Image 1 (tube, chains in turn orange, purple):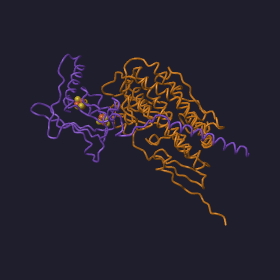
Image 2 (cartoon, each protein chain N blue to C red):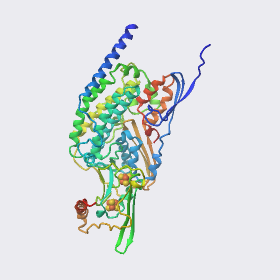
Image 3 (tube, rainbow over the protein chains, first blue to last red):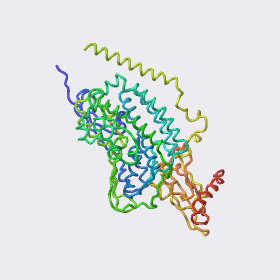
Image 4 (cartoon, chains in turn brown, blue):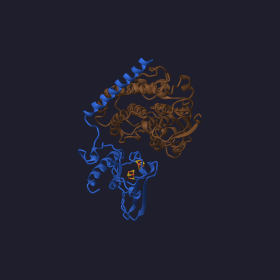
Length: 371
Length: 175
Ligand code: SF4
Ligand code: SF4
C-alpha cells in the first residue's frame, strides 16, 4: 500500500521570522517542494498616502520616513524633490551635497543590513550581528547630524534641517576607513563561504526579460543584468558631478540573476557608495543649507512625478496640487511592492527553504510594500 | 562524481574554519557594546549628541504664545490655550502630548525665540498615557507671554534671539 500524498496549503506568516515584517505567503506544497507561493500583502497598510492629503506639505516629511524606515533619507529626499519641483524652488548646492551624503550613508546601512539578513535567513547568525555593529556606527553619525537614529526627517523642502556638526567629515572619513577592511572581512566570511554559495547560487533566478516585465527596480534589476541606475541614467541632485560605476550581475556562480548575484551587487554598491561619499566630502562647497522658502507653501495647480534611486531602487513620488495648502493626492511608488509580484512566478517548483533565501535576497521591507 | 563530493566537503570545512577564525579574532577586539544603564562612563544623557531629538521642553519665560509650533505639528500634539485677562493675553495651558509625538522637530523650527527645543533626555517611559503629557503651565496658573522688545526692524529678529538666549540661560536653574 502506497503512502497517500496530496498537496497541502500552508500559511507562512503573517508572523514569521523570515518574512521581515508582516507579510503572508499562501504556500501550496507537496512535501518540501512548492507548487506555488502567493504573497498576500496589506497587513502593514497605514494609509500614508491618505495622510499626505491631510497634512500640509512640510508636515508630511516625517511620514515619508515611515514609508521605508530602513532608508528614510532616500525617502525624504524624493519627497522634498517633488515638492520643490512643484513649487519651482532652487535649493543651495551645499544642501544638495548634504542630502547626497545622508542618502549614501543610508544606502550603506540599508544594504549592509540586507546582506546580514540574507545570511541570517540561511542560518548564519554571525554576519547579521556584524552588520548591525557597523550599522550602529552610521546611526551614531546620523544622530550627530540630525538627532535621530532611524526616522531621520532630516531633509526639508528647500534644503536640509541642519548643517554638518563640527568634525563630522573627519568622523565620517574615519568610519569609512574602518569600514573598508570590514567589508573585506565580510566578503571573506559570507560570499566566499562554500555553504553560502551552495544555498544561494542558482536559487530564485530572475531572467533579464522577467526582471523588466515585472518592473523590478534597483539592485534586483541590476543583478539580472540590466544596466540601469537612475542616479546615472536620469540623473538628479549632484550625481552628475560625481564619478561612480553601476554594478550589474555577472553570474559569477553560473547563472545571471540568482540570489548570489543580488548579494554581490549589493556589496559592490556599498563600495560605490563609499567612493561617492569620499568625493562628496572633498567637493562640498560652503554656503547655506536651507534656501529661501515661501512662508506658506501653496503650489500652483498642477501635478508632478519625481523618481529617485533609493536603496530598494526606483522610488517615485507623484503629487497633485489643487492650489491649497494640502496636496490633493500623494502617491508613493516603491520597489518592494513590485518585487513581491515576481515571487509567485519564481517560486513554482522551489524548495520551501529556498523561498526564505529568495525573499531575503530581494530585500523587501514590509512597510514599503504596503505604505 | 565522488571526487566532487569530497571536494565539496573539503571546501565547506575550509570555509567553516575561515569563519571560525574571524569569529575568534573578534574575541580579542575591543568590545563595542556598553552596559546600560549603570556601567556607562558618564550619565547616559551626557553621552547623547547635542542635536539629539529626545524630549521636548519649552522655556516658558521666553515663549511668545505665537502658536507657530502648534500649527507646525502634523499630528496636533501641542495644545496651547490662551485667555483674555485684564493685563492682556495670557496662556492658561501649554500641553505637549509626548505619547503622540514622533520627534520630528518640525515644531522647533518656526519658533521665533527658540523657546521650544529638544533636551537629550529619553528615559521617561511611563505606565499611563496621562503621565506622558508634558504640562508647561501648571494647572490654575497663568503665564504672561514674552514680548519681543521693539527695536529697529531689521535688528529685531537677531537681538530677540540673543536676548531670549540670555534669558533662557538665566531661567535654566529654576526651570
Ligand atoms: S516633534 Fe514633531 S510630532 Fe513632536 S510635537 Fe514637535 S512637531 Fe509635533
Ligand atoms: S514655543 Fe515658540 S513657537 Fe511655540 S508658542 Fe512659544 S514662542 Fe511660539
